[in-house]
Amino acid sequence: MNFIKKKDGCQPFFLFFRREQMGKRIHGILLAAGFSHRFRGNKLLYPLKGKALYLHLTERLEKLLKKGTLDSLVMVTQYDEILQEMKKRKIEAIKNENSRQGISSSLKLGLCKAQEFEEKEDENYYIFFVTDQPYLQEKTIEDFLWAFVQTGKTIGCVKCGKEMGNPVIFHEKYKEELECLQGDKGGKCVLRKYEKEVFYFEVEDKKELQDIDERGELP
Image (tube, rainbow, N blue to C red):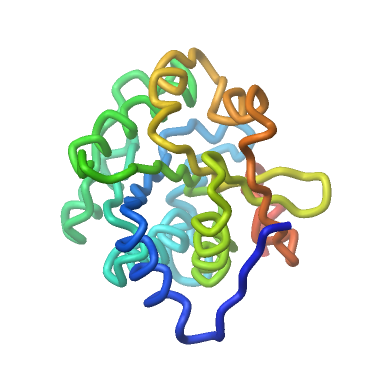
């Protein structure tokens, strides 16, 4: 595995500096438009350790945006409560009026909005997150991105053992294929077509990749 590890505390700066040198821009897209059918209620707004579940990952990405680890961040949601909170935090957000068309509708909306922040003279990458993944840590995201930019690969994905998870990152050359996805087909459909182009990053704690589907999965 092409993983290069820097000393704790230095890595975020080196990641930003190295990307600037290499002409790479990383745009974060946060998906928060699901229906929580198995949860019996809106899981994204459900309280977890004193805050709404979706805010755990959102706040970590907000920090990465401020550090410069991410060049932009876009939230896609169907919920007015989340849109209002993003407005307070000055995070770009777009409403998905067609959530019933599946995750592909959110992915395409986020991708379209993120392109507004592209730097045409640079290479642009899009990294997709899901907000029902509250245990994913800031350092894990940084380590993943640091390792990914060293590899020269055009797709990156986190995994634990044989289980793939989120986030997934794509080079801009896959935009058209991502924009052609339909229904509940997400980016991993594109990933599977180009296995030789994929960098897999091993996450030690499987819990970080857990997305919450049922109330019984919460403490």
